[in-house]
Image 1: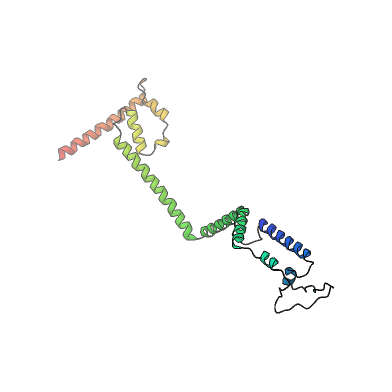
Image 2: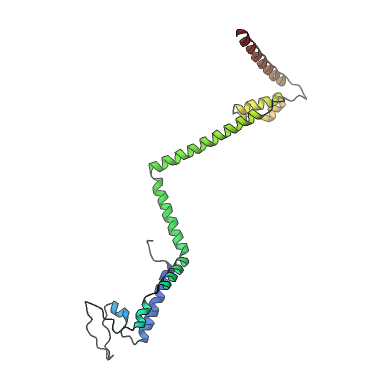
Length: 211
């Protein structure tokens, strides 16, 4: 993961350096592994403040205690424990980085023409499928429905079949078919429907006679 180290890692590194510095002070400031790694000249065994030339070819660790060397390297169990603690302490950090990477990946795919085309095609397919299922459901309901008992019910079914049901004011339509108070409008509609039925019957009779 790019960027600076997580806060938990920085704290652990700072504590490690402080412990190493304290250990060097307890040893009298001589034979410090940090000094050797930094290329500084080690103190003489007499402690008189004289410095000897440090070798440029290799680092002499003869003055370093074995216990100090052992403390530097973690055991396998300690490595596993440290890794586990580190991951738990920085869980939020890793999750945020993973989310950023995921969003960046989707953004790069979104810029691709193929990605946009596939997205549109998938959307169209979903709309077509939903529309087809709705049509099949309506057809099944119409097939199993009993014959209309009233003229009002017949008109409503016709409007639903023509897909114009959403444009109709059913309160007004119901008033036109209200049998409690006869009106010219209702009579006109009934007359029109009766005429339609008669024309259908006549057409059927003509077809039978032609055969």
